[in-house]
Each structure stands twice: as C-alpha cells, then as structure tokens.
Amino acid sequence: MKGQVSFEFMIISLIVLSILLLVFATTTKTQIDAQENIMQRRVANLCQDLAEKINKVIYYGKGFTHELDLPNNIYGIDYNLKIQNNKTLVCSTEKFSIVKIIIENKIRNETTQVPFFISLDVTSISNEEGVVVIK
Image (cartoon, rainbow, N blue to C red; front, side):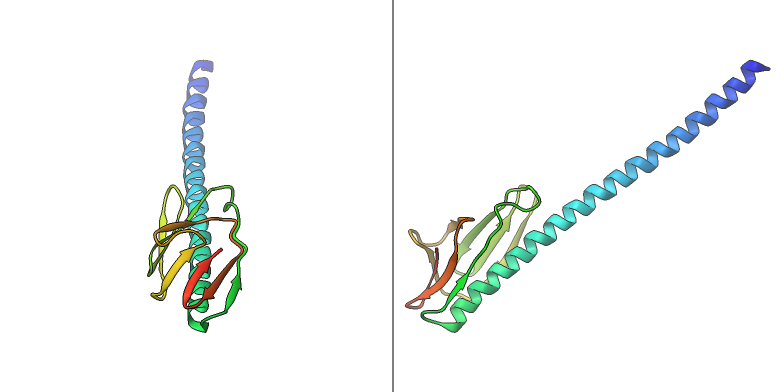
C-alpha cells in the first residue's frame, strides 16, 4: 500500500510541476514581448518627435532653431538615428527600425551631406539659409 500511495503522489506532483512550468514559461514570454513592444514604442516616439522638430525647423524658415535633448540609450539599449536621404529619418536598434518621412529639403550635419548618422550628443537643429543643420 505504501508503494502505491507514493507512486500516485509522484504522478500528481509531476503533473502539478508541469502545469507550473508551463505557466512560468508563458508568463516569461509575455513579459519579454511586452518589453520589446515598449522599447519599439519608445523608439517610435523618439523618431516621431525628432521628425516633427526637423519639419518645424523647415516650416518656420531661416533662422529658426530647435533645441534637442536625445537620450544616450533607451532602457539600456543603444540606438541609431540616420538621415537616409532628404525625405527619410531612420531610427533603429539591433532588432527593429522605424522610418519617418520628413519634409523634403536640404539637410546636413556640421560636416557632411546626407546620408549621415545623427550623433546622440547633438544639441540643436537650425535652419541656416534654407538648409537644415543638425549640430
């Protein structure tokens, strides 16, 4: 009789352990997916904000300047900002990229024409004689 009770206990214990393991795995995957979605939204918001600032500088014309304060990373993950051409701003991490359209105009950083990466330590976007300068 003792052997039979022990065997039944082992089977029930394994079933309960399997269910708990399945719940833990599902919860972990859901949390990882949620963190990636939050990261993607944060990068999308940053990209949208930067595109809007560039468009405002273009729209308001010569002499208009907009200050920038870009984070060094987003939740500990590095990211890149690139002006692909005169119409496209690309914000990317290792896992995904987000593209925002900007008003067509001449855009450059202090040293080069498009395409170029935007340094994360830039402080302003200004319109100098009809050319948007990111510095």
